[in-house]
Length: 193
Image (cartoon, rainbow, N blue to C red; front, side, top):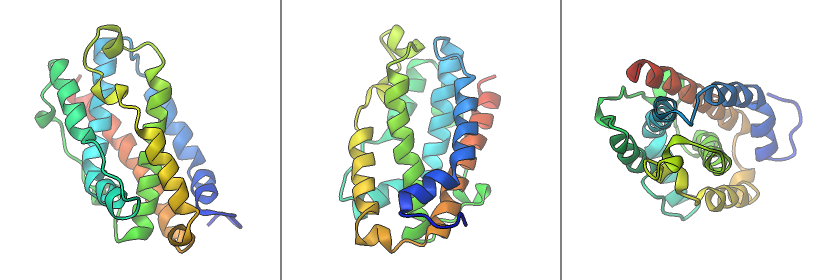
């Protein structure tokens, strides 16, 4: 693992730093002011979120006691508004990306990446993008609940359940989740070529 970490979040943050930067760079290479670039962005997120949705929604309900908006449905609607059929996108499975969601330890790592993704969306939303600029196809981007979920996750991580998490298993799952979204971006680019 990473040596001594003071808490679960710092372990996950330090242990995924290179994957996080790499994935951010890949997504930043998309021109979100262009309809096609914006569609690839939304499609990639949809492919990744669909694969991890059950783990994330169960974790949010069971551990954070929060109900989520249906992000995959929001992204599917955004793609339909852009003229793409989300049902035709490839589907990825957690296991295909070396991810095993065997209980709360790995689910915590997956949740960390997904909650962080929603926080990142708030920064992207403030930048020019095709959906917002054209008054459509931005349901997913316009949702501002990411901060609420991220704060709830941090509170959980700092509580007794979070302190009991096996950090190695959570870190393994977080790294795998970044890999899942990298694969999702590759698949979205192929599907919407």
